[in-house]
Structures are given as C-alpha cells and as structure tokens.
Image (cartoon, rainbow, N blue to C red):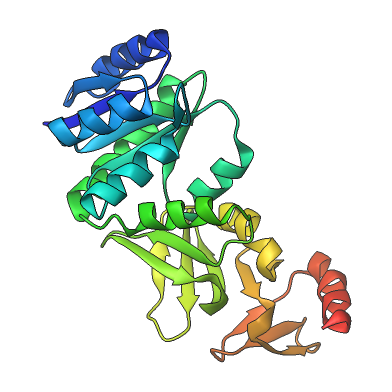
Length: 253
C-alpha cells in the first residue's frame, strides 16, 4: 500500500481528491491531511508518507516552503511530490525541468490517473529524490533560464547540464537523449515536449525526428538533400521547411 498526504488549504479540494483517489487509485491510502505550511511539515514528519499532494498557495506560505523546511530539518526530501496549482506558469516550467508531476485545478480525473501511474513507476524503480532538490534550486534562483534538467528513465531519475545535451531524437512517443560523455538515454516523453523546453537554450528542431543543440553543430552539408554533422559524428537530415530557418541561424552564429 502506497501512503499519501493531502496538503491544501481548501477543504473541498481535499475532499474531492480523496474521492477521486479512492476511485482512481484504491491502493493509495490517504493517511493524513494538512492545510498550511506548519501543519504540513508536522504531518509529514509524523507520518512519513510515500507521496505528497501539495498545493502551491497555502494560508501561511507556499508548497515550496514546505519542501524547504523539510530539507532543512531532514537534509533531504524522502517523498515523491505532486503539486496542485491553479496557474503559476513559472512554477509549471520549473516542474517540467525537474521531472516533477503537477495537477491543474480543477483536477481532472484522467490527468490524476496518469500522474498516479507515473508516481507508481517512479516509486518502484528509484529512491532518488535529486529532482526535488533541482526544483528547489530553480525556485530559489527565481530565474527561468534553468541550467540543469532532470530526466526520468526506466532506471531512475538523472540530472544533466543542459549544455551537455548534444541532440535529441524522436522514437515514436519516446525521446532519446545523446549527452556528452554519457550513453544515450531513452525518456518516455515526446520530442515536442522537449522542443518546448529547450528551444530557448539554443536548440533547434531541424526535422520531425531531430532536435539539436546548435553549440554542437559541426557542419551543414547542402548535398544529398541537406544534412548536418554533429559533434558526436552523427549525420542528421534537415526537413525541407527547416532549411531556410537553419541557414538564417547559422549566419548569426
């Protein structure tokens, strides 16, 4: 049985979450609730749940304050975290870079089911909570130019410098990352999701299947339909509609 705590200052939302969880995930036991930073920290310390469902805005602070206090007390976070938020676009971006799950209010039962499935997979394969540390690092810095990214694989969660990512390749609904001085790793998210995250970090989608870090582009070859050679010596095709855009970018480099 997976144990969980609900931390939200809205009693109606907590009641609704209880009902949805009883239907969607009967093997998750809600062992406690809290409605503030202080009561949340105390409840977590006392009950030590496997999962936290944590609202961002609380009466006496934020969900991030809960995690900060737990980290200060225990040295690390030892629960998986699912944030619940009404909007908070900056926070959502931080969640995505940190491989953390979130639910938007009002909570959709189908989205809850998806998150529960991912949480179960993470709990079964890893006790690594470094991605929560990464989230707190990004929140503390209060800038959205994040330097590191957390990637969740079948083996666990790994943190990488974004500047070390050479390229990403689509494999159906998965994305394969090619990272400097590391073996390729496969992530169960689409290339489009990572294109949205990485474009502002100097990455360019040159093909339906390829997203490249322009810092690792060695050469652009016009023959044979056009392709690029990357620092890992891979030759990648360029789609016809991306050629003009790539040529303009190369003129600015």
